[in-house]
Length: 448
Image 1 (cartoon, one colour):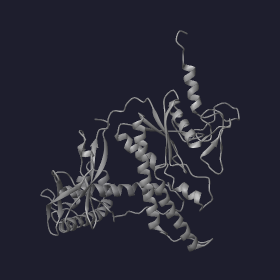
Image 2 (image 1 turned 90 degrees about the horizontal axis):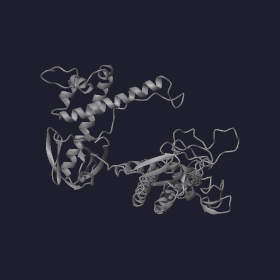
Image 3 (image 1 turned 120 degrees about the vertical axis):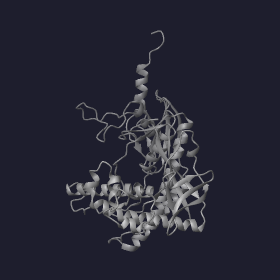
Image 4 (image 1 turned 135 degrees about the vertical axis):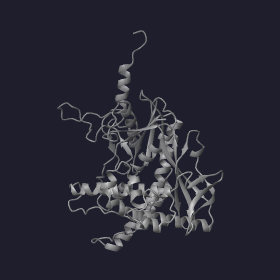
């Protein structure tokens, strides 16, 4: 049971208007308690941080019991009558985490560890948007088609039975363990974020890898590469063209409004086109989810145990002038979100992801003929030194898969395609043709 992972499902409930109001009141009281408690925790942080049980140290300051009849802060006893003990401990843990984060960031600022020399010091924010944590058996009970939740009704706390509208599928897994959910409330409904401890299936032996090249014009190109360099499957992922058009129209509207607002010179106000940016960002999130799911389906269908990406963390675009369409498209590139979402989803199915050094995967031909020339009108089209015309992204996906088998997995950001010799020419980085050469050299004919 060492490889347990935690994943969450969203459960929609079907409450009546009174139950929604009770839930809103519960969340309001929960946040008021947290806001008052954060100041107490920060005031006594040295005592709490050095205590063997920080939660017990905070409770001694605020909670009245027979053994602790006169806590230092009577405010919590007087203003939060019958506040459930498990909710109180959940708030205490949240307050300790909030203060601990602030103290660490403030110490880093004092030591000079800042993004800018004139950066302002961090601030302790006591107004938090905490979600109510419901401990099983104490604040929530799971029934067959409903849940019982302890809610605040103005003067007292009591149980309310709420039907469940729809659930996920993780609670049906044979070895899943339900953990304490969080309650999410709006003016129109209630939902639960229910975490589960699940055990993914055992990872099979790696016999194939699915190598992925993430691009600007084509969202992703994937190939299935065997250890001997044979490419058994390939696919272009262009199913989100309509979503991309919707996103680009919103970005175009932002550019037009910015041009009309400030002209050739000037500055935009803080929060300029915030709603349009939010919609474009949400469309990008939807595209990333779709592509990650399609990548996983493609890999599992073709028997690939590992999905290989390029290591693009920290990469910054060079092309396109400031404020240009190309620069805006680079900022909306899903190179990181697709990788992270694919990793999270594929691990749950027992698969793995890996990353390789990206240098030269697209600029070198997979057949070893040398560097490629990109078509200026159609950048996805590449011409090899031999005169062969090929898709540049597809060629790159072959090289990415070959680098995994050549063990050129990324170890640090300073890796390059240069060899250790003193010759000025750049050596060919790991390409598919080099994997072919290694397999051919290792092949021993029968009877020899």
